[in-house]
Length: 300
Image 1 (cartoon, rainbow, N blue to C red):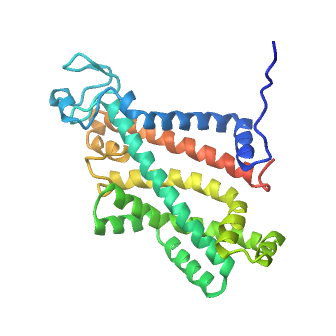
Image 2: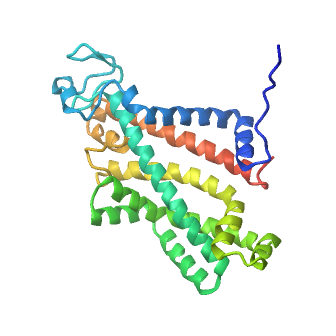
């Protein structure tokens, strides 16, 4: 028989360094596993959920606000109870998790792309281009995130696409500033001068040479901003101007039970709230660990 040795991920690559750093921290490893399980639950939600909470044929108003462990009129068990419309809370939370992750993830990726492009352009070209982009960044960062999103959604209305647009608008400036700072350091190095001497196109220098060397701070900020985007979307939905009731997220599920929270029907708000805290907390722990691993000044 041949023995198979389990080796740690190689630290020669950025991904290897990140995985190796996560494995060295039990807290970060547990957080990564929790996030992975939540992500899998969201992806396979339609197959995992006991019912489709938005199919009216599967919902009975007679099952409204049943406590956890109650039996439904059809003979099933509501392990986490039901809400005011008779929806199974476990199923509603799985579907709400799908919506929250989709909105936070997509808006974070789009904001990352926009901010990265503008930050690289500002650092490489400098001068008036840099001044214009950075003054716009200062303007965006000068206003509270929630306030800008509230004003924008109050103007353009509700909807998944509109919430994503609002979140992208309030997030891209953070990426632009981080990328510009990293790119300014890399811009003066010899490999950039060599690429310019070879008469490579500016786009190739920006995205083929500068960008790969700016990835560590981007990965960290991107991870944390996804958590911030999920929290911001939940806040907007809780206030009633985020996602519509036909596409509820965890924030809207919390808002649905807020009025009856003190009357003993705690499960309608508490369980979605705990799931939201668990999701954001796990992402933040992973992001903090990546910050320590990918930043040589913080690595121990």
